[in-house]
Figure 1 (tube, one colour):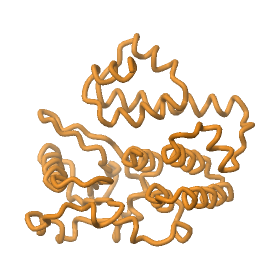
Figure 2: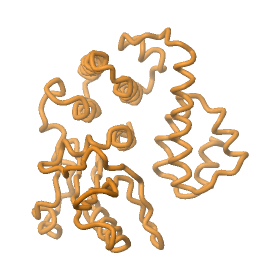
Figure 3: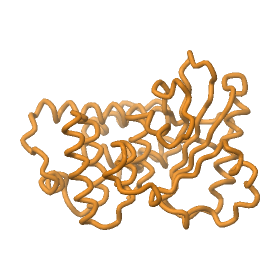
Figure 4: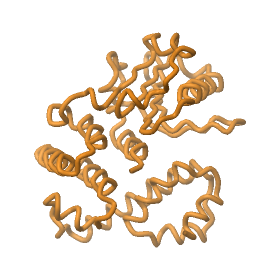
Length: 270
């Protein structure tokens, strides 16, 4: 399961979610914009950057990293990209803060000595999902994060049903869609229709609503692709227009690893 892509969908849909993990969020937290930012003249691309609104009194840029596999070079890469970004945009921002999200402490890099000054500076928050408690006791956004970390299939389904009920009570269609997507990733052997039946979702959704969701997903994917690989030729656009919702979701996951048009062409051919 590519949990990082789920988290980036969460942050894109609900940018304020990051600030539920920050002890002292800025006053303009609700107006921050989540972006994937390329640092020019380098091979670096930072996928989790929260940019302050233009009218912010103090322009603090937030960096987020979601790490669900062991990577001993994580902090080397994270802080290199962070400071390179600040170097390229030194006039635009007053301060920075970093948030790193792990499923548990055992996936954090082993050697923390070389980065101890930064990690203990008060400008970095490390979050361990398995230490946040029961998802039923958290705000909806944090509960979605915790759902990605549930390993038991039974607990995942029970947690998803709980969140779906909470989302219905608050009329949060976006939450319902994200819960469904998370469970689709977890149960990759089942179709979306089987997932919806398992979760008790209404499968008789009006066609117009389904088509609107599909078009919305397509627009998001195209916007992300344009940022990743530049302008897309008409021939490739035609292929993308013909993708189903499930294929669009797979493309949204895969494009996080794209660096040029050739990567997109290879994916479409496969």
